[in-house]
Amino acid sequence: MSVTGYALLAFLSPLSALIGFLLARSGRFRSWRSTAALDALRGTARTAAALRAGLTQAAARRAVRHLRPLLGATAVALSSADPSAPDAVLAFDAVAGHTGAHLGTLPAHVRSALGSGGPHVAVDPGCAPGCPIRGAVVVPLTTSGRAAGALAVYGSELSASSVRAVTEVADWVSGQLELAELDASRRRAHAAETRALRAQISPHFIGNSLTTIASFVRTDPERARDLVMDFADVARHALRRCADFTPLADELRCLDRYVALECARFGERLVFSVRAEPELLPVPVPFLCLQPLVENAIRHGVGSRPGRGTVCVVVRDAGRELHISVEDDGVGMEPGYVRGVLAAAPGTRLGGGGVGLANVDVRLRRIYGDEHGLTVETAPGEGTTVRLRVPKDVPPDFTVG
Image (cartoon, rainbow, N blue to C red; front, side, top):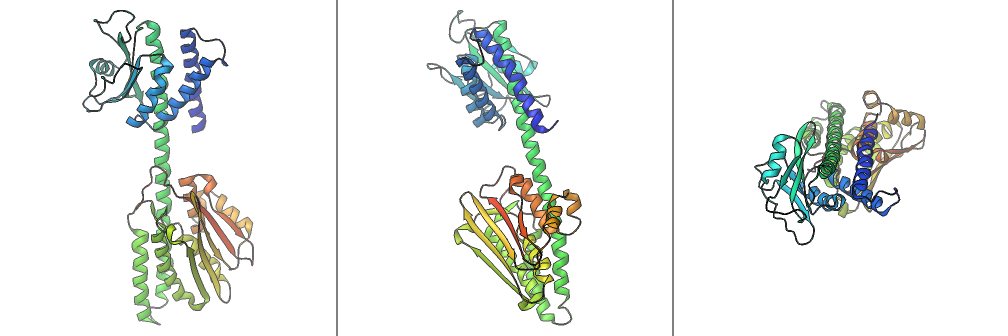
């Protein structure tokens, strides 16, 4: 079963049982069209959305606002599993007239629940039956078999039914926290795969650049020396241990030095230009996402045709995205070949032709999703235009340098 399938089961199975139990317990279970059922569904959906960020303070504050009415409690608190933390009680929500006196270090009844690993009931001996906060039911929250925190529910009713209700809700909250960890693991795995794919570009680039320099070592040593300096600038950018994203200005600066190397090889046969508005230069883009596309345009487009060839990079502002195109008037490619390059498994296609094109396509899909892969317009003798859409917001688990 896919991750999505497991996530759906993890959400729906406990959710339907939980809502049915809570409504039956309150005597309001008439039909799934009842107002109570709809309110319960709405509350659980909003709680789930908050908890998918993990058990952070901000997520806990959003979650308790929905958990309290769902449970019909006087107050609800979410705590971390670290009893020594000064802010171990992450969030507290109560009906009007009750303050957040429980915020701060963990109360004794929460410590007891975390210590025992199971539900704990604490009764205030000075509070008569029927008072708003007669006591608390506390249930630990677990992820991957370890304590992640605790759910504490305060109210006037401390019965077996109340303990069961809080336990059901705590189990469901633990499931949401498990899904949050799964999401975080998936994002970290995608980020690691993206970095590995990026690393494959550097050896490919080095080999091509050194070949260009070598062609001038005997015929024009001074030119070769200048090209070595250009290569050093590009290599410094390409090989540095940098962040996953870099400003567009840095990416274009790398292109400028790289094209200087290629112009040494092709001379007046190569015409290169960039069109980008100055206000777009600070926008972060995936590191080394343009150089491989320009290299592909020069080597397999302009370099394969007689006479002069043109390569142009165009960057347009499209609201929340940058729309970037790399255009050449070279020999073009068979559309079927391009589809094959982009459709093959990453390990297969990166080992053969179209390394730069395939690499950037895979990285964009890893970062933004399949809808942000490359689009290629080409035909034999008609040149090639490669388009990419880059959202201006950097996704989680990626860094900007």
